[in-house]
Image (cartoon, rainbow, N blue to C red; front, side):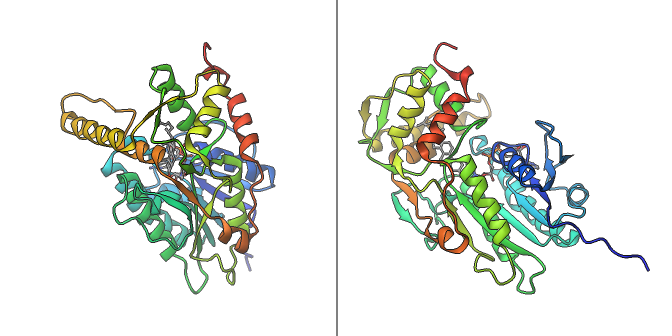
Length: 345
Ligand SMILES: NC(=O)C1=CN([C@@H]2O[C@H](COP(=O)(O)OP(=O)(O)OC[C@H]3O[C@@H](n4cnc5c(N)ncnc54)[C@H](O)[C@@H]3O)[C@@H](O)[C@H]2O)C=CC1
Ligand SMILES: CC(C)=CCC[C@@H](C)[C@H]1CC[C@H]2C3=C(CC[C@]12C)[C@@]1(C)CCC(=O)C[C@@H]1CC3
């Protein structure tokens, strides 16, 4: 009689594994002895122990090929928030995530860890030490957030009481670190264009920025804690540096670290928000004729001018989470990793 070989519990897949967070996750998993199947619409690197599967996560057959013998799936793929493309967000984050769940079920995957976002509860107004019990945003700040909410609901609902598929969602906030294509490059580009002179509001608003290795640590802890009787099944967890910082101090530390001047002049929050809203509407109206993307979108202004930091008590209690890299060290490593973005480079 043929014996069925049980898939190894150290064989996992990272959907979105070519991205910023995905690649850091793949590297850590490999160093911990996992073999990794990387699924992405693009391939951005090669690594021993990682097998690449290039495909769209909306294509179930392509996914099934990547999930063969895989017991654990990390889903960290998403279109970039800056793309501001409603149809694309809906297709990838909602329909695509449904396809990922179906493929996991058909392939016999036992555990799925979703990268959600703490911004699923953010409506553009202050959140101080917010817990996971906060309701989802009724008026999400953009299409990206709107579809991240639906995505998280789908994944948590897919957690099966018969334990055939266990799911959990990780909600990081403001991820930064080496190879980040978003935060530092946008910041430097804005500074190079002479637009990082202003502080939006009084500059005292506290925000979470999370070093990428802490986000990776949270994902792996969640995967390894996800067992049938575990309290984390079907739940969402904030993962941050647990060191809320003034938004403008963080920006200044990165800018000064790279040789740029820190922003100094204050502008009233409501004025900047109103202007950003107006500019966004104009860009929407003109989209068929001219494509221009304002730097200060309403979403970025809201993120820059309000308090939004989150409690990680639940992750500490249920999975023993503790950040592994401090904010200071994270900023240092990040600044050192971008020599080409230094002032004058
Ligand atoms: N960067 C941040 O500050 C935060 C990110 N997140 C979430 O973390 C996850 C990872 O984000 P990042 O690494 O920053 O973004 P990223 O853009 O670097 O990575 C996303 C990856 O998904 C892939 N992808 C997009 N559409 C796909 C599709 N249809 N099929 C297959 N692959 C596809 C992209 O090619 C890319 O490699 C996302 O789910 C994002 O929503 C959550 C909170 C904060
Ligand atoms: C005001 C200005 C031009 C600041 C430049 C930095 C911003 C580009 C980042 C500051 C906070 C960041 C952030 C995200 C993207 C980059 C920033 C706006 C996210 C929207 C990425 C996706 C998420 O899920 C939430 C993040 C919140 C913080």
